[in-house]
Image 1: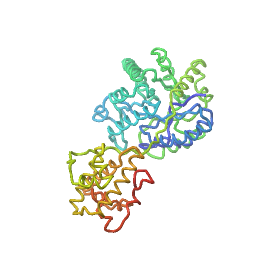
Image 2: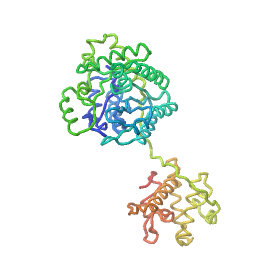
Image 3: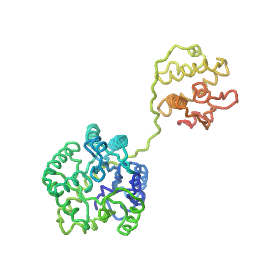
Image 4: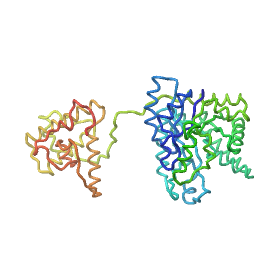
Length: 448
């Protein structure tokens, strides 16, 4: 067995048609042919990860030894200005680099780096570029050191591109490779690997593979082989070629995709046996298994989390204090340890005043009942539901300011508090609408 550390799904087609693998088919096929596991490393895209996790959880029941890893094939550049402001078609390069999360914390690092890459995005013709700078990689990895694996990717990676320069009588390219490898060793420590790929169709790939194995020995960096899978098996080669030609766009030459499919260990060996020793091949195999053993099983599923909203300075001493002796939950909110609870109550009393609402028994009983449900649910879900409504108010206010005015739907129309803080514009008490359809402690969750 071996672990396949570089593979693609249909999500790699986000910016350019590239891959015919469905996520489910890719993972199940890898398990079926006896691989130790497989890493999803789409082109600057994490969109397949949730489905991959679901499939992995199913497979764990059948084959707990099979490992699905979540990664990203990024475009790592030295300078955003260099590739953006000085872009020249066919000349400017966007070197590939593989990142694989070892843990839940590592996946957070991937998400941060992917966010930065998309914030850096720009268009060249019909192609959207999403580069990550080396400085951004270093800064994020400083916080998540030991949680992410890095590898040099394909011939389109930095080492591969510099190897091409070296072959065209540019010896200074070796100095660039030296600096790059030492920097990667510093950033990733023992979680950095050199990558080669099987190919018989291009002499360049074979020469590069030999070169990388020598680099591994020289720099004491472990070498792995990957298949950079863009289609499932050799039987799908022609289908994949037709898919690539279905739309115009910038891409590698067709020879590159000749062996980019999911292989058994024996198939991989068939590509290497003429120029790599069996001992070297087994060492590389063990290095892929080492990666698999570093990957923790983790799940990204979690309960909904309400992000905090900015709370302005407000007057804690307001009219609702007069009702704290009579109403238990108005008192709880007025004296709450949570600022957002006190702020929601402040907004409520402001709404009573601004909308000319009487502080009578009907209205105050309704406020008390709704605050009770908010409090009880907050205690059950262990986060303040007040934040949910304060955040929603901020979003609604933003929409009004931008003139994005529309109609809402759902049971929130029955919430008197929503009317008072200007989320909705219809008084539910006037129309005898109940609040329990929207929020009740018997269903402790974020309301619709």
